[in-house]
Image (cartoon, rainbow, N blue to C red; front, side, top):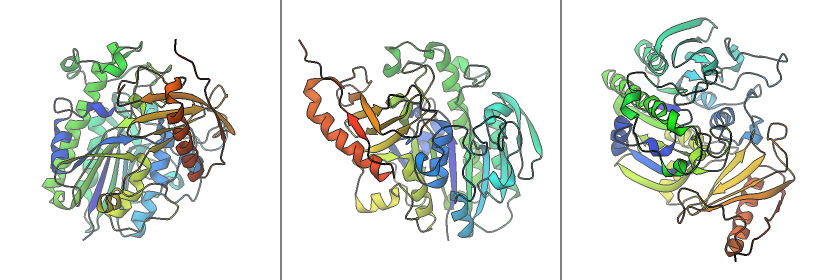
Length: 440
């Protein structure tokens, strides 16, 4: 009997928010399943990260290297594979893969219904908005069903989006297994209000919560925004409990694998002028808990995991053959074989055209000379930008890219990065070394 799979997806959530006081339900779930403490995104911006999840390939390979690029027509998504395997497929929440990039040209559904042929072939349940922060706020808003009918909701957004997922489980009558993708926007900031919007009654609980060290030594908006941010996440945890309780009520829990993760982290304007789009752990380190089926025993996993590993893992859990085109590694296969990644690879866009790797010890990043990453998806020449020794400097306070003592380390990391760039289907670029500074 094939297992049901629930993919519970947050937006812009830091890994260090998975604590018993912020996320008690997720921590309890981790004790049943597995928590992966070294999980990282492969693209620290919303749309591209989602494109990687749905297609199993890197953002440059599927064409969605920045926000506002729709999945190409006839792209085979996760839903297609699950549909073909006899699963029901359901999608709830933020999609962010349907609108074309040029204003006034092509299809634009940022505030309107996603056309049927741009719904990623999630066939059995659709309660979504292409850009949920454009059709809603922390409180109140609307989504659309598969036929384009607007569905208004009143109340805190995370609660209401979860309601749509619970509604799917309540109305489901077939004996088919299901793949439910629940895509929240919390704790992402509310764009048009320029702030995070936690539940009003919960924000005071986090008013004096300690600021993480990787933020506190830099200027940013964390002092003002962190309580709301944590309140958003606490709400996601409460809604996770509601979902788990519904699975138990329906007798589905024992045969369901639950995956909890996020598209990227949040650095609260400490590393650039916004919240992500950089190589720093604050922007790329994400929570990952998988519980159910073979993911059991409460073991904390320290292996490196990339977001690109989750599509093959999801198919593998369901017993669906993993396409050769997929770029990630199934965590099921890795756990069985004992093999581990030596690094995770990142493509960075919009703030820059950049590439990076994160190993267990180091972060190494390069960028092109272009002022932004909006125009081109890749470059022929990159310049070394950042190097951090994460064992000695976990808060990433000291950039070592010009430190002569790390010359050999940089050379090895450069070789690894070029290997990953080429493996992702890009032409091998030149990486120009940083000018080494001799310390006095």
